[in-house]
Length: 479
Image (cartoon, rainbow, N blue to C red; front, side, top):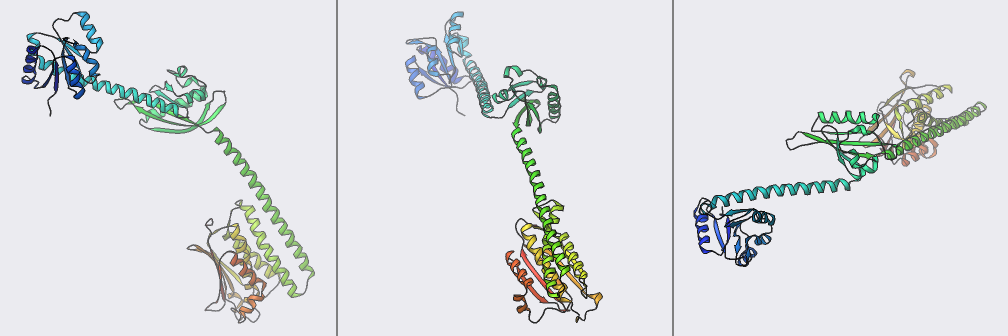
């Protein structure tokens, strides 16, 4: 490590020689540079900065303390004087001299120790000054930061008394900073203050910790405001709790907006329920009119046409009824819908006293569909089950009555939904393709499947009967 450099400013060669011997060969083992007057000392300082300046008080071109301005607080200056009276000492210290030494044989001998002490004390003072300056600058920065934040900010000591706040807090509460300093939360109305105090005590018990809660706060104009408090403890130099710093976020407008949105949503829900209820009722009126018409019709083909139309309308009405009952107008639980629709179709089939009423076997997983999926898929299911009831078990069917069944399945497969209707009847007819183009029911199935971007697959069962599968992609908002 390089030895400290001492600049000797003295025009007496004898004194300089004594100082050099003492400093370079003594306990301190310092290095020395020499300037015989102030002008030479200033030239030296312009080129290099020593660790300490040891200057004689009287010099040919001035006094030693004049070098202080050139040192600019970067280097300690120690003055050597032959005799220092009280006024002279006061003047030197006021000028910024770090210390002074009265010339004597003893002081020249002790000079290494004097210089060593001066360097250590200078470093200590400089470190303290830097720390104090850093604290002051940090305090100014934090104060500027706190003032720049638009949220009301406050800080308290460990006893819950306010130490300060920012301007946003003043504007929000109507209290000036000097009005709250040293005061407790009971400067607010008691109903608020007791909650604030209890929360602060809870936070202080768990130091270090943070706390966030929603409560009210009196505003500057007397009106209560809804706020979210965010608080945290901060430590002292020993790590013990020193106090609490907190901020308040005004959410009154957001709360009011949420209430308005909730009220609007409730009104819209009521309106939608009413719309679905009225649609269901109107469809029921149409179904009733068709029932009245059926009572007047005896021709079998015409009755079939009216019955099929009625079942299609009933399939849509059932969706409206279920939406109204469940209250969720964005999705439909298709599991319950399938059971209800199949039960209605079989009941209507039996009322027509048709032979060979099959038993339904429903294997439907819980699948939610959007309204855009549910209505087309419900109509497709209606056509498929109706076709089974009409054509799968004619009078010539050899299957015993108690073994006849229709199987309805619905499940999710990867990113698709599979609807499957199968029977153990006579199977698909040989002229299926011709019937597919002529039959209104099959055209409805094909059209609605394309609308859902799906595919229809028709195949004979190995043990007799037919199976029809409708595969549609699951939409992103369906589960």
